[in-house]
Amino acid sequence: MTPLYNQLPQQSVSGWGQYPKMESVQIAVHSKRKIRELFSETKRNGLDQYGLITRGLGRSYGDSALAEQILHTEHLNHFMQFDADSGDLTCAAGVTLADILDIFVPRGWFLPVTPGTKFVTVGGAIASDVHGKNHHLHGCFSEHVSSLKLVVASGEVMSCSPQENAPLFHATCGGMGLTGVIVEATLRLIPIASALIAESSYKTANLEETLTLFEEHDNATYSVAWIDCLATGKKLGRSLLMLGEHESREEAVKEEQSQESALQAHKNGKMNVPINMPSMLLNRYSIQAFNTLYYHKQTRTHQTRSVHYDPYFYPLDGLHNWNRLYGKNGFVQYQFVIPKSAGLVGMSRILEAITRSKRGSFLAVLKAFGPQNQNYLSFPVEGYTLALDFKISPGLFEFLDELDRIVLDCGGRLYLTKDARMSEATFKQSYPQWEVFQEVRSQYGADRLFRSRQSQRLGL
Ligand SMILES: Cc1cc2nc3c(=O)[nH]c(=O)nc-3n(C[C@H](O)[C@H](O)[C@H](O)COP(=O)(O)OP(=O)(O)OC[C@H]3O[C@@H](n4cnc5c(N)ncnc54)[C@H](O)[C@@H]3O)c2cc1C
Image (cartoon, rainbow, N blue to C red; front, side, top):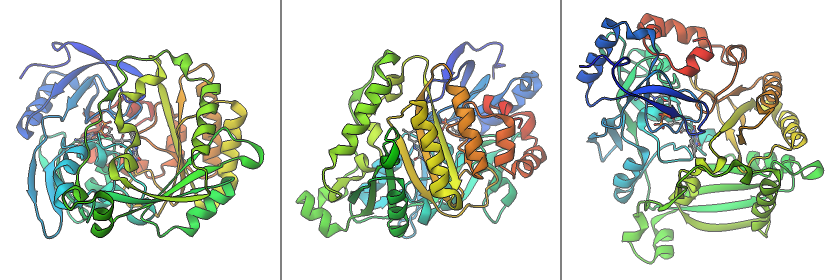
C-alpha cells in the first residue's frame, strides 16, 4: 500500500457547513484488511504525526470529520443479514439510512431513530449518536444498536455491545470517530404498516405555549417545533409544533387508494443548488420575510394531514446541496440543549439574545429530549434542544461565545456533530465524562492515531 500523506494529492474538504475547510488526503477503504494495512503503513511511515479520521457522507456540519488524512467508508456499503422476525439488521458501516429505507420500507420496516437527513451512514449515525424527533420516548440511535465491530489502532477488530467491551462501546457511540473505525453494526428496525405519517400541527403564540404543548403531548411518537426566532416581545418563541404517528395500513390505503403504494419508499429528489450562491441573498430582511410567511402558512391553530415519511422527516433532502445557499464562506449550525429545569427562562434568554443580535436563522428547530444515555460523549440530556443556522459573518463567533455563556449558565451543552468553533474550556465543562472517554481511548491506543481537527481544538 502507498504511504499516504506525502504521496496522495490533497483536496480541500469541509463539513456540511462549508466551514472550516482544510487540505487533506482522501483514502477510500474497501475492507477490514485494507484498514489494518493502512494503520500499519501510517505508523511505519511516521504518518501518525498527522491526524487520521473516518468520514461517512460528511453531513456533520463542522470539523469533526476533518483531518490531514481522511478515511472514507463509501465502499463499506453492503447488507449482511436481516431477521424478519425481530427486525435485526446487520450491515457495513458505510450503508446509508437512505439505502436502508429504500430496501426495507416496502417490506414494512423503518428506522428506530432518524436524524433530519437520510443521507448519513450507519457509522456516522453511531459516531455522532444521532437523535430524531422521538428522543423523548426512544432515545438515540445507539440505543437501538445491539452490537458493532470496530477496527482499533492496533488493527484488531473488536466486537462491542453494552455487554461485551462495554466501555469501548460507550466511548464509540457518540465518540466522533475518535476510538477507531466502525466497520459493521447490528441495529433493530421497527415494523410499520404504512409509509405515511399522520401529522398534527399546532400554531402557538409564544414560547410558553410551545413548551406547554410539548409537555401535554409527551406521549406523541414524534414531535418537533419550528420557532420563528425573529419574533419579539409577547410573540417571542411563537412556533409551529408538529406531532406525528406512523399511520395504520387501513388509513394509508384510504389515502393512497391501493395496498402497493401504502409502503412506497421515497423517490430521489431532483432539485439541486449547482453552485455557491451569493451570501448576501440571506440577510435579516429575507430571513424575517421567510419566518413570517412560514409562520402564517398555517392559518388555523390546529390542523392535521397525512404526509409521506420523506417530506415529514427529511424536508431539506429534496433540495440537493442546499448548504450552498449560504455562500462560499459557509455557515455554522449552533445546536444546544438545556436541562428541563432551565426550560422556559433559559430558552427565553437565548431567544432574546438572538432577536437582539438581529442574526436570524431560517432553520430554528426545537425538540424535547428524554433521559441521557450511558455513552460518554452523547449530546442529549433531558430537556430542550434548539438548532439554528448562522451564516459566517463578522462578529458571529463573538456572538456565539455570548450564547455559549448562557448555555453553560443553564447547565447545557453544544452538539459536537454540529460544532465548528466551541472552545476547549466550554467542551470540558459541559461534557464531564470527557476524562473517562480519554482513558478508554488511550487504553486502545486511539489517542495516538485518530485525531480530527475538532478533537485537537477541544484538547482531546
Ligand atoms: C440536513 C441535516 C439534518 C440533520 N439533522 C440531524 C438530526 O435531526 N439529529 C442529529 O442527531 N443529527 C442531525 N444531523 C447531523 C448528522 O446526522 C450527523 O452529523 C451524522 O453523524 C452525519 O453522518 P455522516 O455519515 O455524514 O458522517 P460524517 O459527517 O462523515 O462524520 C460524522 C462523525 O462520525 C465519524 N464517523 C463517520 N463514519 C464513521 C465510522 N465508520 N467509524 C467511526 N467514526 C465514523 C466521523 O469521524 C465524524 O466524527 C443533520 C445533518 C444535516 C445535514
